[in-house]
Image (tube, rainbow, N blue to C red; front, top):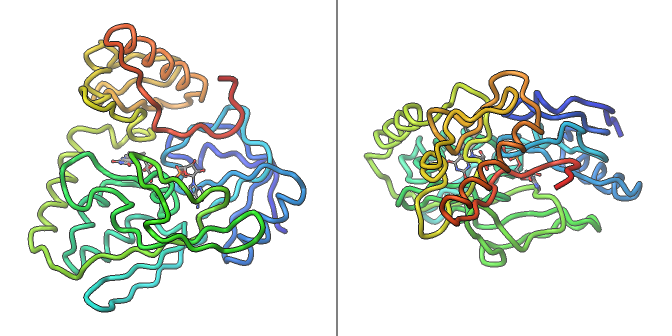
Length: 297
Ligand SMILES: Cc1cc2nc3c(=O)[nH]c(=O)nc-3n(C[C@H](O)[C@H](O)[C@H](O)COP(=O)(O)OP(=O)(O)OC[C@H]3O[C@@H](n4cnc5c(N)ncnc54)[C@H](O)[C@@H]3O)c2cc1C
């Protein structure tokens, strides 16, 4: 197996932060994906999957074991059947490729997907979506089934209903690695969808610091209160900085890398936000971003 060792992961994440992978591999076929996974398990190595790297904070100490990147698993099969559009996507297909297919046919899923970076695997795992009241607004709503490579080598198919789609995560498919998802949506044109996508993109550009490295929303929105961003802003933390990491002055739920930030800087900001918001409002903010690698928490 053609694994590389001591590969820097910072350039492979949107935050541009993080140490090295002990071993790193980008399979370009299902066979390579499966063989690398099983080989690592046989050697008792921990296995971590990296998709688009848009929602992860990689430890400064890096990641022990094998990091499998899905970047080259990007086959997308498109077909129409019985009034539905079907997209059969390997885990590494960028969400932007899905947007193109939905937009070509003027279908509603383009609207929630248009602002989501990252790939299909990460979209399934995170049940990625938007908070606006639109249909559909989360990945789970467009997933028909998910194929998961299990630790015993079986490729198991889970239907939409086999899984539990909750706010910013899907449950019921682990242990294993997401290999593919079958997505579908009725072929019912919405003539306004292109216009809505343009407006949503403009709003995001105005409100979010999209030209700076970040992970998008750092925290989930708590139930029954202001959004996480509003709470952080009310707590007076916009612009709060540790090292080269900063709470964005543009959107308080984004922590941006001003250049050369360390994972520890971001972690300290996260802890400070959680403590301050709890002290001021009695609300516990839960992280949306996933920590990868070794952390002393
Ligand atoms: C500017 C910006 C804006 C964003 N806006 C939004 C938004 O509006 N809504 C939203 O929901 N998210 C948003 N995000 C977060 C992020 O884009 C989503 O969570 C996305 O779905 C993550 O996909 P990814 O491919 O980058 O996953 P990664 O970040 O690579 O991984 C996320 C997690 O999934 C695991 N994983 C990834 N692929 C697999 C696989 N094949 N098998 C098993 N595990 C896997 C990883 O190990 C990790 O734990 C934003 C991020 C940025 C940077």
